[in-house]
Length: 321
Ligand SMILES: Cc1cc2nc3c(=O)[nH]c(=O)nc-3n(C[C@H](O)[C@H](O)[C@H](O)COP(=O)(O)O)c2cc1C
Image (cartoon, rainbow, N blue to C red; front, side, top):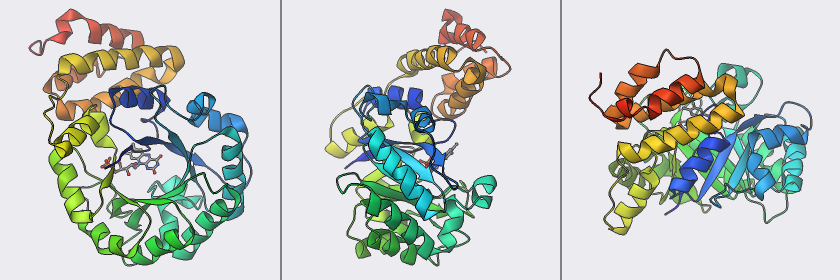
């Protein structure tokens, strides 16, 4: 079984990838999407999305990071994929799942799922220019409005030469509303020979088992669950290996949050406060202590103020509110 850390724009940046891959259990990561419109992007755009390119394309813990491209023009996508190969990306992922209106208006993301031929054409154009040893993967949803084209899309992805296919088990129309329709993946997976990765609504070891059973996939991608539960990947691996594992208690998660806050304060002081609060919105789903701490910091604007509140011994208990 392989567990992959999902791309998440505005949350799963290299600081978070570093932190979560240090906690462990992930086979690889995928960057937030880089939007390609009609030209070759300067290298600095890729270094910004994937600073790991300066480290051989892996996080400090050694986990490979594929770079995700999003766009509707095959030629420009191919041009940028070539740049990525030159910069040393260990893999290139193509986004056909983004539901954002802005992105869809500019002809990228899930809107392309309405045209399976275009999905195929984009992947083929990228595959043809990138050396065979570099994986080219695709991330799709079940469809745009409904899943009527799902099988065509998936077969087209494989025929275009994609190395692997990750499927977020919802349509664009479903957005992020539960449930995820893992069994829909299971209907098409037997017709594919490339590895298929199931994604969507995996928050626990039990969800992981159910997603595997319904989709027929061994490999899974974890997004919001990984942010809520920093050692979710280790929990899933241990459960599946039949090994005993005690999940990290809040007291061991808190230092990770402090580390994250410290790194963001240095790297992106302007955005640090909102990034930290955003992580809390996920953590409070799993840890009641995070909920009370979130209530305490939610109006704070300065990262140093938030960091001080988090590390204050007074706030390390869970009975202060
Ligand atoms: C805030 C946010 C940002 C996301 N950004 C991306 C992205 O840049 N590229 C992508 O392919 N998917 C993106 N996704 C979708 C996730 O990768 C994933 O498919 C989705 O969240 C379902 O998985 P989950 O239920 O495990 O979170 C994003 C999702 C969220 C919630």
